[in-house]
Length: 254
Image (cartoon, rainbow, N blue to C red; front, side):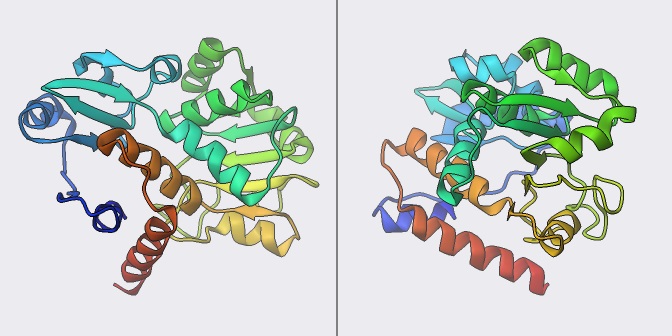
């Protein structure tokens, strides 16, 4: 996706995957300081990386998670493009979120970004997570509603926007973060998992006639925003979409 954007923009460079165990994170960032324009940060480093950065953007600080780092003359500056990337994905799909009731499943870095973005846009945001303490920390930090297990079904049925930010569906495509048959009565269902393109949650929602959105648009838009931070150039988003789709198709054929 990023290499296609580099070629389309006529820029030299490459985008590489750097497998980084948690114990090697600090050493990896020293490498970034010496030889990279920037990097993306993904699970499990989006929150732990903050302590190693020289500067953190206001939105990343408010979210408490970083997914994009810019290296500026050896200084590491952390940003979060997941938040705005999610909003761009909703806008592109014509999905309403302002003044709507949103329920987020999960409480990790992506959940924090999406919760922040939706609350800033005027949505009423609630969070459910199997580990209650993690969800409680997120809700207390951002002033969100915490949903307990006994209230989950009621909240799912009544929400306008259900967003799965957990890895359920990624690790096991046949699994769903919700009990069988439980879906919003009339709300939109979003799953930020992009591989597979259609998770069990999305499949069940479509079968029930709900509007759905997979994870590819958020992936592309957060990537486009990161690309602009690294290069100062707005990329061709359609080129990025095409490359991402081709990459996911190759993955599914393996």
